[in-house]
Length: 282
Image (cartoon, rainbow, N blue to C red):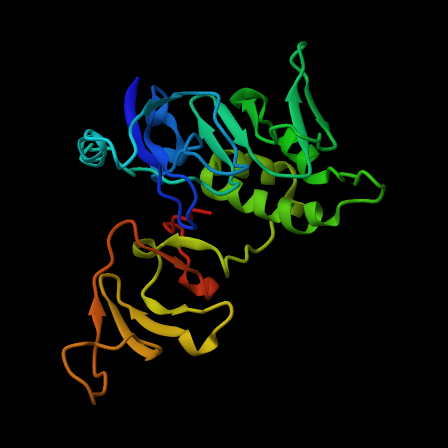
């Protein structure tokens, strides 16, 4: 299997405490060429707290040293120089496909293939991985309709309304983006789910949206908000907060222009920014 991602963990904690030896997490996989997450520079096996994991690939841990050891810097440098160092990120809870499986990672629903091949849908189980790997040929319009029509119940009784109001629309949007052929097949059978998508607030690759006015909005400090013009290649500052320049003082900002990379992202602030080629990462 090819190495697709390397990351270092351990070391000195941000808030003090005992220093932990560095360790290298090395992820290998033989399915990445047929993985929708990898296409977006993501991987389910990247470590996270409470995140989904993957049935494919493997993670190996190479134990290193603390900063007091002679081999510490050599160990750290050797992994940081690896061509796959920090190559991939952890995806959000988003539909995916890997090889001949559809990955379903959403909360409030438990999906499992039975021994007889039947796909069973039930209320979520406590302390279980919520990610389901559904065989491609069993991810049918009928199953998708069962998923959309499912009404999970809370432990103390009553419907979990967030599933119907938030998770189902999100799942349908992801279905359209990630597996459009399955979406088209589903809508052909269930046109009532063919509704206009609302993309505001979602995160997309900047280079895949229309030229437009884009915004950064601080959750707690509106005085830090920014407004930039995206022309398809450059971002040009228009208004809002901008950090001071140290070269001199007593100046006004006439123009600031930056060139984003292919990995740069932006939060969608208007549905008009979205095209059929827009790539979402959430």
